[in-house]
Image 1 (tube, rainbow, N blue to C red):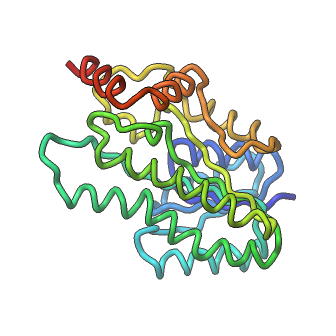
Image 2: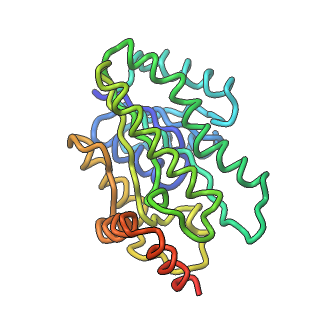
Length: 247
């Protein structure tokens, strides 16, 4: 029976993923700031007792350490750790440092805090997978994503670095790059979101990809391929195209 910890599991992809993994036979620790939502998720588990709540605030080191102690006391070791906590704010014309700081604190440094408590245990066990949720918004700079996009680009870079460094220790690091998924975060958008997926479908795609050997789990493919093509465009061509789209 696989042991799994999902950080960022109160809503959206994380919550849907917990349900799918419980149904697939995993014992799942779910973490987020909302203890009430976690309790509801555990209570409604498709397999009684398969999901258990462990509240966490990834911005606080003491909270992360306490949550890790609770998870590992119950599960002893982890087969999968999904680092999925995220914050999204549309950028304004004028930069507000407090917004950038908060988004970075959750999206990037929150992952770093979790890695600091999970990786030593996985390295000691010589096994386990860490799956970091980034976004295709990390492929290139996008308008109105000044606070959000760079944190996702940083996560992709971090995952690439750790995947190489930790392979000899038997620990796999992978990155999940979704496109638009209907969640409380994307509900803030006031623009068309092409190829929009439901959270349940996104979770299904992630679960199906788990047995594969790929480093990156990215979907939906039309959106992924379009963004990857934009990534290889010369800067002048890309910036000109994006400017026309914005206008």
